[in-house]
Length: 455
Image 1 (tube, helix red, strand yellow):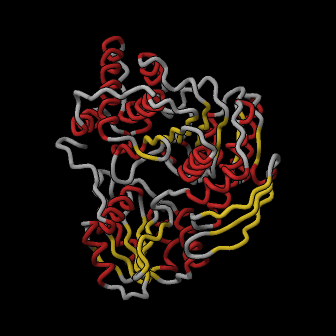
Image 2 (cartoon, helix red, strand yellow):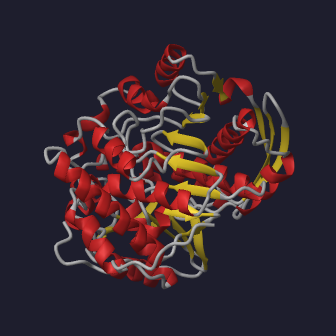
Image 3 (cartoon, rainbow, N blue to C red):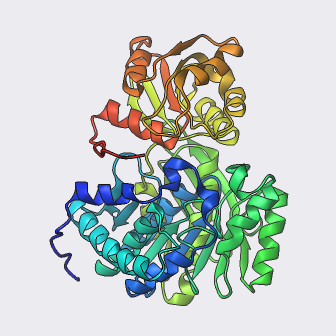
C-alpha cells in the first residue's frame, strides 16, 4: 500500500482551504456551473486518480446514498478493498471519503487536500477564468485517496444532478445507477420529473450498464431513451426482479429477491419499504461488475447487507423515549417517513423537531408529515441556507398544530425530550444538516469546528 505522507497542512488548515473556495452546497448557486471541464483538468494534473478501478456511479433524487452504502458493504463483504464517496457529511468532512467502510483519518484528509490544493494552484495559473469549487476539491480528494490506498472498486455518489456534477468525469465505467427521481432543485435541474431525469441520466455513457430503480413513468421513459442513445445495457429493477418482504419490525426487515442472475434471502437493518427497492437496486448494480472479473456471491450480499449502516435515514437512536432521526427534506421523503413510522415503529403521533433549508418546499413537507404531528418544535440548522425557525413554525401553526420555537438545534432537541415521557416518540427531520447536528447532540459526537470566514 502507498503511504500517506505527513501533511504540512493540518486538518483545520485543510478546512480553511475548502471554505476559501466557492461552495455551492452552502450558497445554493449550483446554476453558476456551466460544465465539468475544470474538474477534468484538475484530475489530469493529479494523474487521473479516478481511473484504474471498477466503478459504480450513482445518481438520483432519493436513495442514492443508501444504495451507495449498500453497494460498498456488499463489495467489502466479498473481500474487496472499497472506496466510497458520498455527500454531504453529517458531522465531519472525512465521512465523505471512506476506505473499507471507515472514514479516512484527519491526517490523510489534510495530506490529500494539500496535494489537491497544490494541483489546483497550478491549474489556476494556466486557466484563471475557470475557478474550482469546494466539491471539485472534495471529489478529487476522494479519487486521490482511493488510488493511494489501492482501492479495487469505487462507489461514487453524485452530488447534484448528474450531467454537470463534479463526479461526472468518467469516459469508461462498469455501472451507472439511477435511483428514484422526484421534483427537487427545480431552479437548477428543471421544472418536471422528465427534465430532472435527463440531468440525472447524464451519467450514462457508452459501454456501461445502467441500473434503473423503480421510477415514475415520466422519468423511466427518459432514462430508457438516454440508455438507448448510449448503447448502454439497461436493467430495470421493477421489471427484471421479483422482490418480496418477509418480516419487518422496529430494528430490521428481511426479504427475498430474484434477479436475472441470482437469488437472495437477506436481512436488512435499514427501515422502510423504500429500502427494499434500494437494496434490490444495489444488488443488481454489484452484479454488473461480473464482466470486470468481480463476481459477487450470495453470501457476500447477505453478509454485507446485514451489516450495512447509513445514519440519519429513519434511524432509531434512542428507545425511551423513542427518538428517530431522518434527513427527509421533501414532501416525498416526508411521506415515506410518515408511512415507515406507522408501519415499522407503530408511531402515529410524535413530537416533531423540524428545520429546513430556505430553498425547500416547506409547505409540501408540512402537509405530508402533518398527520404524525402531535406538536412541532421549529428550529434551524447551523447552516447559511437554513430557514429561520419562526418561518418554519409559522407554516405548522397555520395548520393548527401546537408549535413552539427554538432556533438552537440542541436546545430544541432538549425541549422535545423534556416534553416526552418514556413511551412517547420524538422525530427529528428537515435536512441532512439538522439531522447531523441533532444526532451529534444526542449521541455526544464530535463535529467539525467553526471556521472563521466560513460562508
